Amino acid sequence: MLKGLRQIFLDTETTGLEIRDGNRIIEIGCVEMVDRKLTGNNYHQYINAGRESEEGALNVHGITTEFLADKPRFEEISEDFLSYIKGAELIIHNAPFDLGFLDNELSLLIEGAVGRNNKIEDRCKISDSLVIAREMHPGQRNSLDALCKRYDISNEHRELHGALLDSEILADVYLAMTGGQTALLLGDDVSSDDSNLVSTFTRLSSDAISFKVLKANGEELDAHQEYLREIEEISGKNLWH
Picture 1: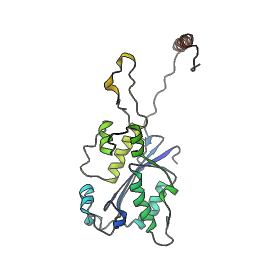
Picture 2: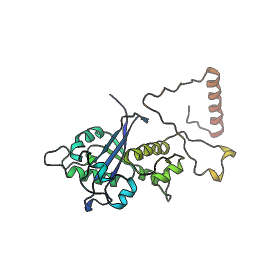
Picture 3: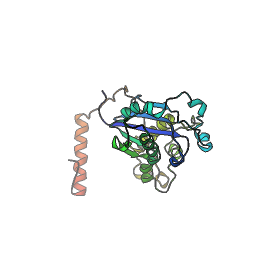
Picture 4: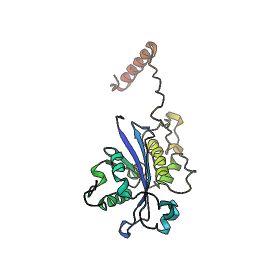
C-alpha cells in the first residue's frame, strides 16, 4: 500500500460552461503522485451525460455524443471514482469550475446512493493551482497553456483538450512551480534579464532509481568549518553552527 503524501491532479470535460443550463460532466481524468513521484495509478473515465454538448464546448474537447453513447452514466462510476480520490489532496486548475460540476453530479445521484448531498471537499483537501500560479506570477496570464510556455513544458501534442492529458500537463506544471531544480545565479552572474528564472525538473516514477548520496570527507568538513568561522568573524554571528 502506498504511503506518504498522496496528491491527485484532476480535470474534467463537460457539455458546456454553465451548470444552470443543465450541462454535465463527460470525462474525468486523474493523475496520481505520491511524495512527488508519479505512480502511474491514474484514473480515466468517459461518461454518457445523456445530452448534447454545446457547440463551444465541442470545439474545445471534440467528444461527440455518438462516441459517448455506450459509455456509463455518472451513477455507474461514482463509487469507483469516490473511492479513488478518497483522502487525497486534489490539485485542480481553476478548482471552482470542476468542483461545481462534480458536486452537481453528486447531488443528482438517486436517493440513498453513495455521495448523496456530499461535496468533494468533504472527502479531499483541495488545492487550486491557478491560485498558486497567480500568487507566484501576479499580473501575468496563468492559464495552463501560459504556464507551459513559462516553464518550458511542451504541450504541442495537445490539439484538443482532454481531461487525462490536461491532468498530466498540470502535474508537470505543478512540479515545476513548486520545487524543481532552480538555477541560482550569484554575484556578477545576476542581471536584470534574470528576473524570471525558470525552474527545471525531472519526472520521477514510482520505480525510479534512488539518488546516490555523497558525503563530505574529513578535509571537506574542515574546510566548511573554517568557512563558517570566517563568516562569524565578519558578521559577529553564525546561524549555521
